[in-house]
Length: 138
Image (cartoon, rainbow, N blue to C red):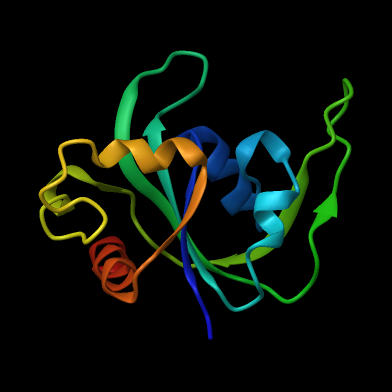
């Protein structure tokens, strides 16, 4: 059974992954990526535009399907060797989470909805994934 995931990263990092056909989570750790399987859907939530300036964004910034293949490691230089998974990114627009908060099961009626995003990667319901995908592709 295919699962649905929300991953968390700054918007500029998500855009880099989208242009390169990959995803990274939790500062390049491999363990969270190993929970994801080929065929799963993943949507990125970006609390900020960039890590450097911390300008608040609070938007879904990418959605796609995980491609076949395993988690792999790349050398980005200066000792940084993050793990990645390949993703087929959909043609989608960035959408604020704010108008969706009361409709999403993960946040409806929850004042502390942002807490779970601190984990960097978590599973969501089909209902929530469908709602987010519809907002991003229409």
